[in-house]
Image 1 (cartoon, rainbow, N blue to C red):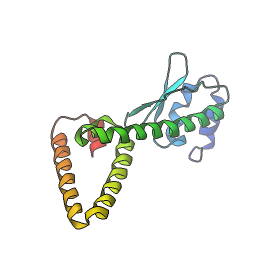
Image 2 (cartoon, one colour):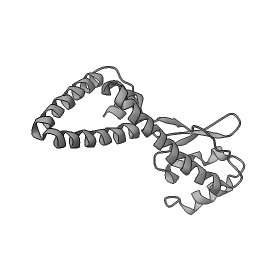
Image 3 (spheres, rainbow, N blue to C red):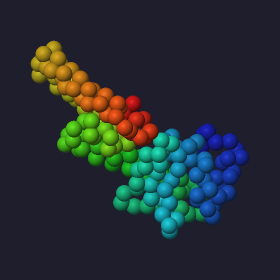
Image 4 (cartoon, rainbow, N blue to C red):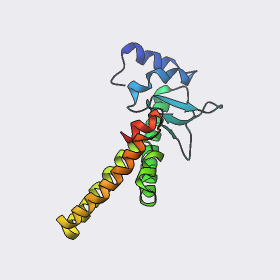
Length: 166
């Protein structure tokens, strides 16, 4: 709530009957959440970024109560848990999928995090097992992956895919 004006904070706290009216203020409350996804029953079932990447809440949903500050804390917890879940799933998929296909299937944050994790691990392994020679082999692999990504970028991609790959 640090980036909300007093008027915005009062408006959020006064919206006890209609949780959807808090949507315009979410960007200031949570980095990366532009809006929440509501079920027909009024439960919060997912979140959407400014780039329109959607992450569903798996395992449970949030039932907004009259106390906005309480269910917004739940949103924060669900955000952390579900982003972590998506990243963990992307790590598993990274091992099983060609990189140029994998990068198109996952949200941007998962792509950045997983790519950084594997790059670090693979560089450390190359340095530990063969030094410069193994590192040179790894550069060849990276260049091959990059060539395939370049082919993707030159092809037809929607705005979101282009943002993730870029």
